[in-house]
Length: 169
Ligand SMILES: [Cu+2]
Figure 1 (tube, rainbow, N blue to C red):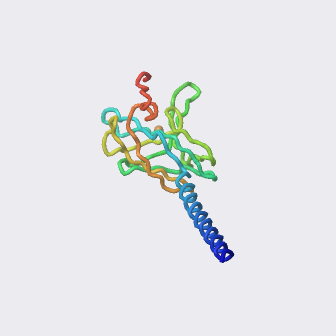
Figure 2: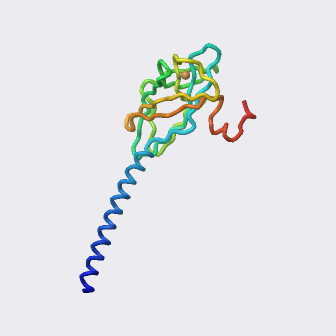
Figure 3: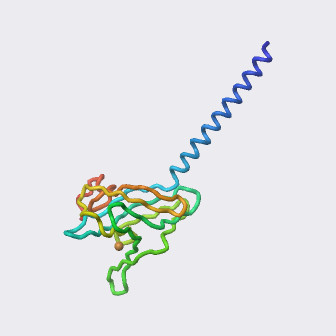
C-alpha cells in the first residue's frame, strides 16, 4: 500500500508544519511583546548630604512598530518622580522644568535621558542613595503600560563604569 502510506506521510508532514508554524507564531508574539520597550543603562546619582532628591538617567529604545509616550514614573522609595528637562537660559544659567505631557518616542527610535537633558527627578526619597545601591522604578508608557526597571546608583552611567571609565569626572 505504497500510495496510502505516502498519503499518511504527507498528512503527518502537513500537521508537523502547522504545529511548527503555530509555535513560531507564539514565539514571535512573545518576542515582539518583550521587545516593545527596552530600557538599558538605568542609573541615578548618589544623594548629597541630607538631600532626598536625585536625578535618574537611562536609555529607552522603542522597538515596537508604533510610537509610544513616556508619561510618568514612580518608585515605592520616593514620594514623587517627575519628568524634567534641563535647559540653558540665554544668560547661561541651567534650569529644570517639568515635562507635563510626557516624552514621545517614535517607533524604532531611542530616547536618551542623560545629564544636561531630559531626566527623571526623584523627589522625597525614603533614604539617601549611595554608590552601589539600587532603586526600583516603574515607567508608565501610554501603549506599553508599566515597565519595571532597577536603577543602579553611581556617579556615571553603568556602561561607562563597566568599561573602567574612572578617569573622567
Ligand atoms: Cu530635574
